[in-house]
Length: 292
Length: 292
Image 1 (cartoon, rainbow over the protein chains, first blue to last red):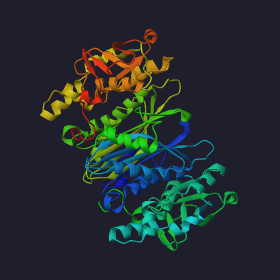
Image 2: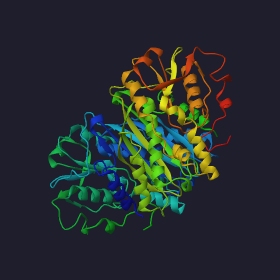
Image 3: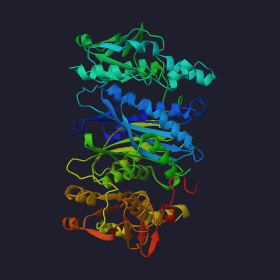
Image 4: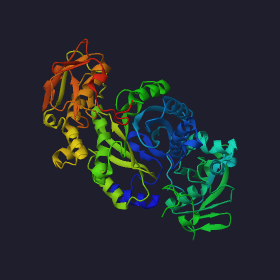
C-alpha cells in the first residue's frame, strides 16, 4: 500500500480538519504540533550514520516541520525503541546530536523501550505567539515563490549524499547534507513575524518539486518554477514559501524561484515541463520505497 | 541495559527539570505532553489482539498519563510504522479503536511509514486550565493514598489477562482488562479541579506497588499500604493519588488504600512486608523483560 492511500483511510476515520499540513495548528492552545518517526532500514541504515547523526537528524526533520509552519520551535519529546544490546554510549551520543538540532527548543521527555531494530519517534511543539502560521492551501495567484538565497546551493545535495552512502562514496560534504541538514530558522522567522497575509510554506523533506506540487494542489492554483538542478531530490529540509509580492520588500536574503498562477491545465510547470498528476513526478515513496 | 540506566544517561544529557513524571508540564503553554511507544513483540503480539484493540490500547496508555497529571486530554498525534503487506482494513480498524479511548481528546495528526514490524508512537497533549497538575514528588507525610472505589476490583486483572493470552486462555473479561483498559477520567477531574494543595498522582501502568514506590521515593517519604490482591500486576491503568486528608471531604467514590509517613527505614510497606529498594519489588522491566 502507498502512504497516500493510507492517509486517505485515516482521513475517513478522523476527518480532515487537521490533516493536510505537516503540523497540526491548535489555535486554542497557541501551538502547532508535529510528529515524525525514523525507522532503521527504512529511513536510515545504522552502518551509514553515527548515533550523533541519528540524533541530529531525528530532531531536525521534526523541527523543520515547525519552521515550515512559521511557529517557534519550543518543546520536544523523543521516544526511542532500541535493541537490547545497544550501549549507554549510543544513547548519550544520540542525545548529544539531538541537542545540536534544537533551534531553540528544549527536550522535555519521551519514552524508552526495547525493540528488534532502532525506532525513533519525535514530537515537537511550536509556539505561535507573535507569528502568522502558514498553510499549504494558502497560496494565491500572483504570489511569488521564494527560498532563502543561501539555500539555493543546497538543493539536491542531500539526495546526492544518500547516493554516496548507498554506493560507499566518501564525499563528506554531500553525506553531511543528508545526515546533518542545516535548518532554515531565519527565513521562517522573517516571514512569520512580519507577514500580514495568509501564505504557504513547506520544507523540502520530499524535495522541492514535491513541495511546489503539494502547495499548488492544496491551494487550487498552478505554480510555474524555473528548473533548478536537484529539484527532485528529497531531504534537503530547506523552506519554500509562496508569499504576496508586496511582502518581498520586508524580507531580505531570498531568491524568487517561481510564481503562482490561476489554475492551469497542469499543477506545476518546472522549466518547460508540465506536471498534471503527482505520479508524473515519480518521487520516492516513503512507505517503503517502490511498493505498490 | 535496563530502562532505568538509560534514563540516567538521558538525564545527564538533557537535565532533569522535566524528567520524572510521565508527562512534561509546560507551564508557559498551559499544557502537559506525554509520548509512549508500543512495539510489536515487545509490548504486544499481533496474534493476541485485533487492530481495534491495538488502536484502543495505544491511545489509552497515553491518555492515562495525561489523566494522571490531572490535565484534560485534548489533542493526540499518532505515528504508525507498518509492514508493507498490511491492509487498509488494519489502519481503519486501528483508528476505530483509537477513537474509543480518546476521553474527550481529538486526533490531529501524525505520521505513517514503513517498517518490518508494527511500531506505534502516540503523543498526547493535555490542557491544564482550571486544573492543578500533580507531581509524583508532591506526597507529604499525613496524606492519604486513594484509588477510585470502582477500581479496586480491577487491580491485577490486566496481568491476569496477559497470562490468559500467553497461555492461550479465553477468559475474555480478563483479556479485555489487558487490551482495552477503562480509564479513570472521573477521579482525575474530581481531584485536579477541586484540590488546593500539591498532590501526587500516577497511573498503575507498571502496577500499583510500582506507583506507590515511585511516589514515595520521589517525595522522600514512606508509604504504608494494605496488601491488595494484584498489587504487583502491571497495566491496570487505574489512578492512585496521595492527597491531604482534609481534601477527602470534597471527593466521592474513593477508597483509602494507604497513608504517607515521614521517611522510614523503608520506601514502602505493603501489608507487613517492607521494601527498601526498587529491585526488591522485582517487577517487570519494560526494556525487554528479563535482560540485565
